[in-house]
Amino acid sequence: MSTLTDIIAAESAKPVFPAARAFADELRARYGDSTAAVIFYGSCLRAQTDNGLILDFYVVVDRLQAALKNPISAVGARLLPPNVYYHEMPYEDRKLRAKVAVLSVRQFLRGTGSDAFTSALWARFAQPACVLYARSAEIERRMIAALAEAVTTTAVRAAALFTAPFSARDLWVRAFKETYAAELRPESSGKSVELIDRDLPRYEAVTAALFEQDGETGLYPAPGDEKTRERALATWRLRRLAGKTLNAARLIKAAFTFSGGLDYAVAKIERHSGVKIELTEKEKRTPLITGVRLFFKVRRRGGLN
Image (cartoon, rainbow, N blue to C red; front, side, top):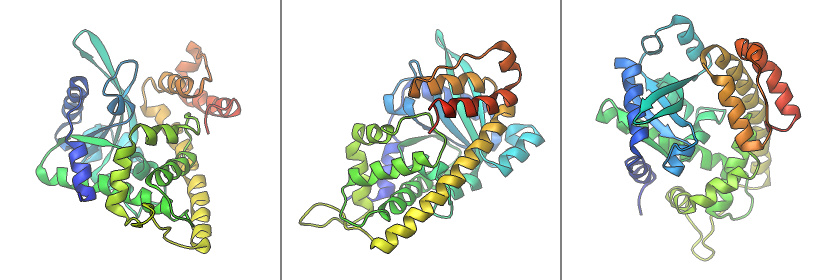
């Protein structure tokens, strides 16, 4: 049986469509010699196209100030990672668009592991991802190990919620349900089910690499009893509060760094929830004030869960 690291390394090595690789090369050049790795993930990776979508990348750097070229932005990235930017580039006869998160190597390794309380990184990278650029074999090894650690952290923390045997599908549907609830997201509650069902063999494989099945039922024994579950539920409630508070703070910070961010956010909310928001030119000129106001408006209309 393949180890979890083997599975994640093979997943990361799969070919991606040329536009995504071209944008990764652009990001490597944009953030300069401090770029340690460029990681591709999200809806475009799952669909293997950027048609009608925005590419999602994490750029992992050695030195935030050298990469961001702005001391104030670097302070923001250190205090409340990651910094998020909107980038475009011409490609063939069209324009590619991407949402790019920038953080340090240390922040990435910590955020994907069991030391991280909130789920922003370990839940995101429990899903498939590709390391499209790594400056060295050692950095690639560390990135793959971090992606495997993200899968482990998410699975273990979700498994603690079960008191009866569970399937891989049970585990990951519950995991993503909880982690989605711990962020401000426009997706519906059914998104976690859709994510798992479209790639169920992958989630079955990583679960088998982590836990031992009951030979008779083919299910995985619950790791604890009712007390274990109650403690886990209490922890997830705290994680939900902390995660949503940090999300709100990051949204406010992004108003200063995410050029075109309001348009991006409104489009994503509409695509996932059906809530339509029309921005005026005046609103676009004051992104911080507009962002705070729209946050409460969209919450009332059901666009953020």
